[in-house]
Length: 378
Image 1 (cartoon, helix red, strand yellow):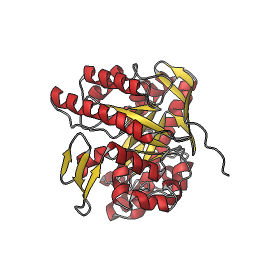
Image 2 (cartoon, one colour):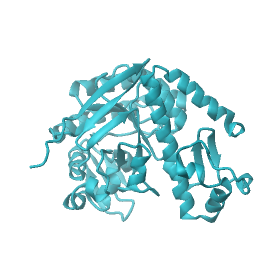
Image 3 (tube, helix red, strand yellow):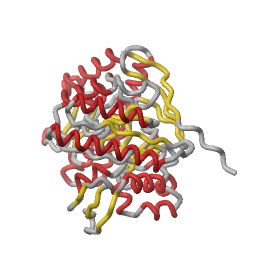
């Protein structure tokens, strides 16, 4: 018989203001928080080897239920040993519910009380995604952290539309929890909705707490609204959420979004930004963003950041990276994705250490100063 998985748990080890650092325990290992989760949409973090992702400091990656249910299919992944074995990532995996992609990618979709019916963006085949089916798929994949099915509305929207979607998401949250049951070492997160209406966010959070989840996500932000709106919603929501459960801000974000959200008590993040930017010639560094498409890099012999421990950042010249980007070479995408994920993980590690030392404000001030001084400091 195999070892019994540990119970899903979250423990805080240090607090600095509203920020905290700690550990999430799952069946496939621990996640140091605050954590940035690289996005592995189709069971791969694009342009990266799994071992590389781990070496950079990532404890957990995200898989997309919508994409994996369409191709290769959840039942097939289960027959092949589950998502961890399938993608050779023996560490924690979080899966989203599929709801956001249904809303944003599907050709034709219809939302009812039961769930969502939609056409695949790949071949037009019709599917139905209910709270129960979403949880079933995430279970077949074997995700350590699973998300309730919710409806994410686009902003700006009316208060009536935000309220309707939030109330539906609450009813789906109850059904998601009933479908999840109890799985050793695995957790289910509820998702706070309510657009940019503080009263709706508060109602959503309190009712989710009444239902009871292993963790709580804040959804429906970073969808085009200004940063100050996102931060205002966090100021409203995070003080309500239980201190003994992880808090996850979905789909966020820029380095500045990360530091400001950690300051407000968020523990977990995911975003395609560092990997997508890397595939399009944009590098994130201690000195801000560097666009390798720009001609001024054509004869620049400096690396992206000679002080970085990441080989992608310190071993190749900007001139060479510019050449790769302009030539559309795959190696350019690989090196810049590597650099970007390294910087994001370095930023998270820096915040964890700063919180432990009670110096998060100083760390954020120094980090922002580096971005603002930019290339003059390089």
